[in-house]
Length: 213
Image (cartoon, rainbow, N blue to C red; front, top):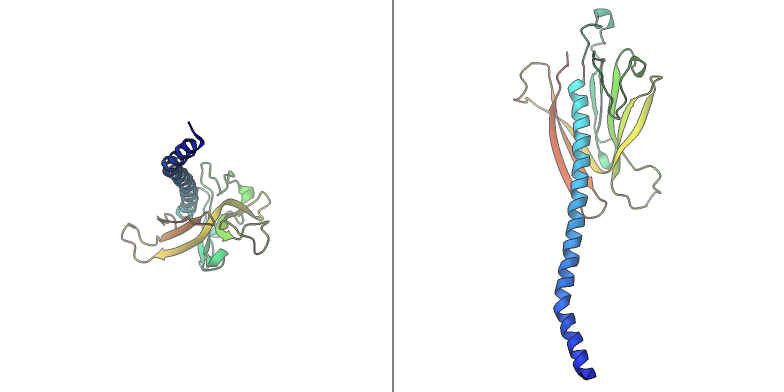
């Protein structure tokens, strides 16, 4: 075999292998994108369920410990929504509720006890803030979803639940048909996840309160 024949053979092999290599690289990139998307969706679903659980608990009063003398002032809101106060104009909200006879948990998994309350009410809040420890101007993959709860001294504490949140919107649903009792409310949560590059994944869930007076 001459040198020329070798060069021709190598060229033909390269021409045949190049499409296969490109296809393999494309499949690997798509697989990585799929896995990243599934991870973001999984994180978002977990966060939405935590926020939904808090909304369902808003205003709960334990019938065994509730007395008129402990009644919360009517002007005090069991659920409060603050618009465009967080990262990239994200909304935030907080709820208050009494403790049940069972084992209740806050949004970071702490068992709720009397020392984690204020005036016998537990507090849970959710907001999106810029990721801590990131220099100003540095590229980030979204903001951080923050859980706000009470420590054992009844003081507010903020804990990061996850990163990769681009936007959080909370809207009260007007005249929701699914509510069977008067006085209850429904809230639509819209959460947009991002990897800080190409992925922008919107998710939406609606949750109804169960215990508002």
